[in-house]
Amino acid sequence: SEDLFVEVNHGPFLVDHNIFLSPIALFDMSQGGAYAHNLFAGRIVLRPELSRETPFHQPHSTEVAGLLNIAGGDDRFYNNVFVHPAGLATYDKAARPVLAEGNVYLQGAEPYANEPDLVRPAQSDPDLRIVEEGESVYLHARVDPSWHNPRSALVTTKRLGRTAVSKAAYENPDGTPLALSTDYFGRKRNETAPCPGPFEDPGEGRVTLKVW
Image (cartoon, rainbow, N blue to C red; front, side, top):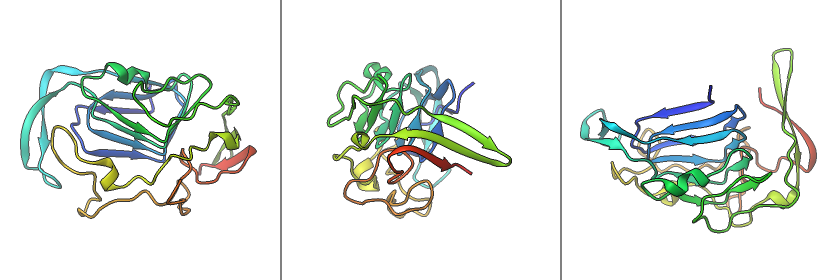
């Protein structure tokens, strides 16, 4: 019923470079998540979980640091592409503030109310289609150069900060700083103004991208 369901996580966790096209793209019953360089084309549902307390842990450990319920929010949305009915307006009512920058909103997708430097281009119909050919899957889309957000920046450990509950940083599993410096295909990203969405420089006009 949804592409991704995140349940009772306090963060930090990272969701990057995905193609979410189901009617519900994200069912968010967590807090402290970071979502970067994704393509969202289904609804985003935010639901607190106040009836139970769940553990959060010491960084890179199973040692329990505390218990808390899920009030919601404290998420980061950087350099994503949202196609209506996707959007971040649902987070306007989140208990904890959300950070959102470098995102692009198409076909009337609603942004987070406090988001600076967002892009809402007039020509915004991506005409998304998934086509299966044998064992391969292709994403067909119409891409317009006006969708690029010149205010986007590389997503790094420093930029993501620390979560409100666990006070932990967004890091690689070995504790080293992370940087989303490559795209879905492993191609190097523009480090000063990376393209929003999963693909760096996907082209213009009608494009066909092999998902797998």
